[in-house]
Length: 150
Length: 73
Image: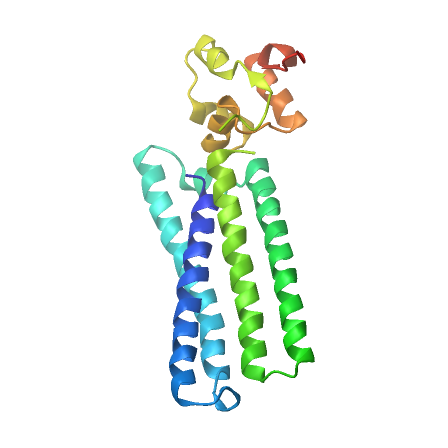
């Protein structure tokens, strides 16, 4: 598996796991508190920071795992970790473009919520959801391209 | 599902003729990942023109000997 594909798997897992925690937390608070009074700011900051930290940890773990398998095969680790070729770049661009379209569609929903003067809670949630769905779709498009070809 | 590209290639045969060169060796000489060589061989990915010329140069043959494109029926 190319290193870039491994990093795409990391991005996909993080893009699914962290938002599940955030939205589960928010749903729990919605049971007892009105949307306008919910403190969503702290969990949202935690979610964003956690995504960055988990991605970095994932990159470190993948780098170590790749280095170990490279050495076991008698190859230099940098030959497998540092090598991002034309196919990786093309797949990355394809996935990012689809992610951009998904995020843009999500922004329309966010705009509608602002026009309806929805609570900040819903606007922030919709914004976060848009980015998350864009990241998930983008990662899936990349993984499909890696396996099915294009 | 059909192959995403109609471009055919003889890379596997050329590797065999070149002393059974491995996919990893070819990838190292091209500066691409082994998975990219596999994808090209299986017709799942069409390389850039530059990489196509580099592949031909590795085997010391013209581009036409590496890649083909079927005529329309």
